[in-house]
Image (tube, rainbow, N blue to C red; front, side, top):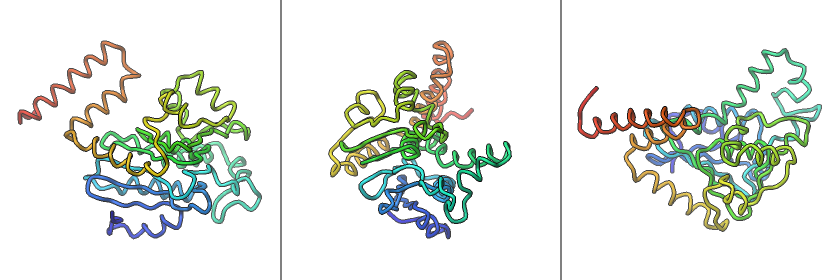
Length: 268
């Protein structure tokens, strides 16, 4: 895989902990600060947001992975210290901001977690070791999750007096249900691979040394179907929760009509 040659920001992204590589219709986004267990920062989130904007139109599958023993240890705890992180506002400074400023800032952070579910791609998170707080939410940002058997998810925000605010609460609730999502978030307990698969949080669990291979196999299977059929199907499933049964049947008919006419070469 090679990084997009047209992007002069690629080296800066890597310094901030993100590497983007493109191989035809597959993009690989790697968290690449293993010595820090891929702790997250606003700079990393800006790099992740930029990577999403820079994806070529040819990309159909995006794989999110991380170097080292942990997927991500969550938010860099330096954000909670008086010194903070260089060039970033620390927790106290953010808390003191005006309402709109604080809301806009958090919305900017959330951008790094929202583009993974865009309609024209399918995203897969390959998760090993610890995925804590922001790390858990980044895995939840993807459409699918393949995990190593040593994975440990935990939503620690509530334990710190905060709430999960990086767009993770909706997908978590949709995957495991309200009661289990509340219990996971309110207790901050660890969720291992067996429970993750059993509850629908993960699609598949494999030994750690088979993680990359399992993700490659899944990506290949996703690429086997025609792109437009996958896009239409993803849109149907994403919208199903907000539609009634009859509304969903109607949406299916409309989507199928588009597919039939496209296959037959009949324009609108």
